Image (cartoon, rainbow, N blue to C red; front, side, top):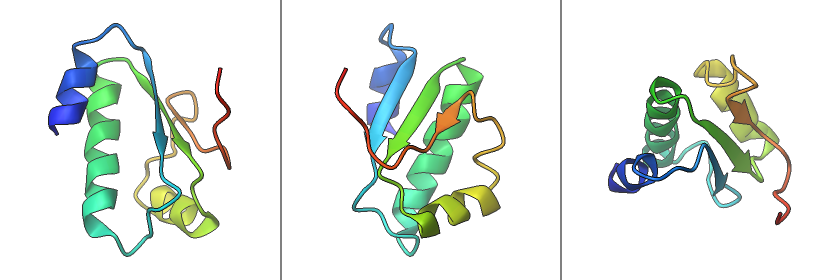
Length: 81
């Protein structure tokens, strides 16, 4: 929650988060992603979840977090700019 609050104080409109180590069974991680996603929507921001496994992608779809692809991207990996 603190990290999201700190990011919201910046001018960054797009956040990239490495989720390669996150499993679907990680309830705290799923709650964190869900909460961050909802907060970013309220503030007009976008998020990219890098390295989401197919199982994690399915779980995010079930949680209805991928309904706005212009706000949440799920590439297999993130490349540096």
